[in-house]
Image (cartoon, rainbow, N blue to C red; front, side, top):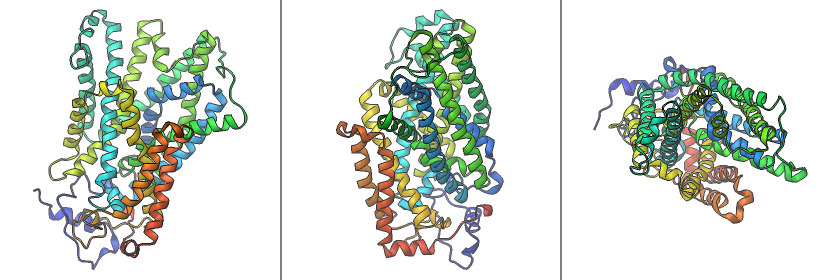
Length: 506
């Protein structure tokens, strides 16, 4: 088992200024590593632009455009779509700020932050749920990027189509080469750590924004500078508002994963204002621009030939010259890789490192999660609707209760006061040891909230409410946890012993 150096102990002991005079508890190698330790001030390099670029990549991705364009196909007008995204963006902005502030103040990655509410060992529950979803989607997004690369390569060199006819475990020879090629690029970027992730996201953000703006401009020109603002009879009255609110709620649910582990990024931010300003430009402003581009793309195509497109890939396929097709495919590749790294690579790397910090550092854990994403043959997952709906959809329904419990515990119960050193101690006297390292009260709040969220999300009888399942889960999880905590003298004692953390100290 790896040992913990004196400097590691000194680093954590120095964090809360008012711990002087307390007997320090031993740090456990099963809980502590340099990658899991709070980020120090000197290493906080993520500024406002870094967050704006991060969100630019995440917002302007193919799946999101398919979702937005799908709303147009369902009958919502352009104005109604903009209204839905404006409402959803404001909610996401508020939720992301709450999550981000926790990471900035404590300097903790998501799996360690979960120890506050779930216990030093119970934290594996919310951490693993997030990791399983991320690994599955990392493989799926890598596969989708490889499909775009295959289209690009066969457009440049038609002879390559001969290598796209066979099947090896469900992929052709060309399919395997493109999949492993995209996989290697992502692993190479990630291997240089979070600073390289920041630089990559900062470079690709403007490229993606310009690429989709140009695509919208081209479509607007093709339509004769006139687009359709509706595909038919747009809903009105109460029906309209139900659809608008439902679309806004689904938009929030799509960000349920990043809402949970946004602290993985904001732990590298110097102050709260960096988060609020970066998020403002990256979320509400950026998302409105995204929604406008989506409306132009769908409305222009409908104006041209009355066709309801399902996503931007159909529009790109209609580009008349090879050069334009190649540039568009390259933009799609860049945005898919950028989104995959931020949303589906960082989270499982921290989670796996948290499982065995004495064996896995951040880079090794990232490589392991990427390897698992290959082994599961993600193209089979993507081509199985039942897997997407029931397995990944069911896991996704658990994200709301987790967020509700973690945020309620941090802000309402502990009032942002945390004893950082004791998050890395297995001593029964430590504040977050609870019962064998598990906070049974948080688990007791999670189970009923999770069951209700899953039922609302997956049972057809509740289809009308399914789009609001994240909110039901988050609200119930938070309320139940708060009620149980208020009845617990032990919980109040722990909360009273917690120590306020000043982010400037690290």
